[in-house]
View 1 (cartoon, rainbow over the protein chains, first blue to last red):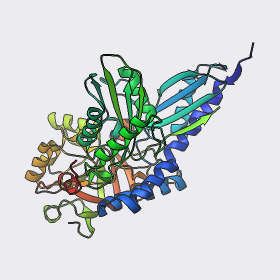
View 2: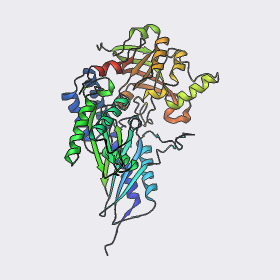
View 3: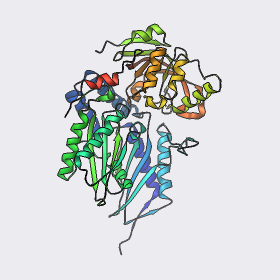
View 4: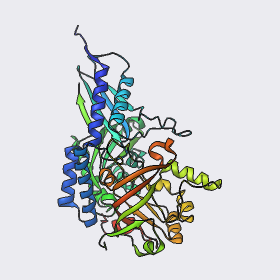
Length: 285
Length: 187
């Protein structure tokens, strides 16, 4: 029998800490390039170009001065894909993830934005924990960790609707467009959008969040979904909301969809909006 | 439509407020105060219970921001605007007391815009997410009230040439309606 690969959870803490520090100060090259292209070649509004220019200069400053791109350093969302041949040792995995988050937010001078009780006391936990942790068992002997500090200007504008089988891709496109239209300037456009289609309400929401991590320009491997991504992107950008919502041609940098088999009676669709500071980082242990 | 950036100094008076229009680019210098969700809730409670506010709001500008912690050797952490709409329920109370300006991002309610017209006030937009750039315009920061709220405390900030655009002027013109209208394409 094959022996499991032992991984001490302290390695997970270290990885989570490093990833949050990196993600909060340094935007991915794909998003950066998309912003530069938007400013230099696509955006038709002068005020829109000046907003994009401020966003790009802010990314440059954040990276060189190791300052958080945005003061909202988000709720800490962690995806941990754990190989089934891995044996985690040295303690509790969730505690290890939370320790990494706590250290990153303290040492990085990132804002702590988590309250203990969401409805009554709303007392800040002071550590930016607990993180939202999604674990998944996958084949192999590695642990893959993806993190995303999720700001709430955009999370607040996300939406869920369950469609009937009589409704099709056109209705899904309109739902996404209308969600962005209703959000207007609030989620800090140009936005990135993750969409989860099918499954159940909670699995669609997790799919949507995972889809926000895809690189700009990535298309769904299924060609009909890829076409729907492009068609929806076009419809969203026709809204004219523009950078910072002041009017313009670039409202959305990209839309990523994921789908899963669903029930004969309904199709949940979750639209998760991400601001232009679409921050994430990944590592494999 | 867009005029050359003018420099204004906070606190504001009616003359300054009336001279600016939606779409104008403005550089703000002087003293401003911060406040977001929790501070607004407490200010509203103080008003309801006839207790004094942490600062006299007459003529002042409130910046909706919860800065990230200040690293050693800096004046403040990253400090971009938060979504203003969440402050809408409390804003007319403060405008009635003489608040003259707000800095944030995102749409305001019709009630807030009506109150801005009545009380002659301005709503400025800073670029959401441009938080390091904005922190460079802050020369001094001190806590005025409620330090236990952490990033949600009320801070006094001395700023220099903070770049904003007038989103809603004291006549009720709203750049969020007028700006996108010119770029909307029907299918």
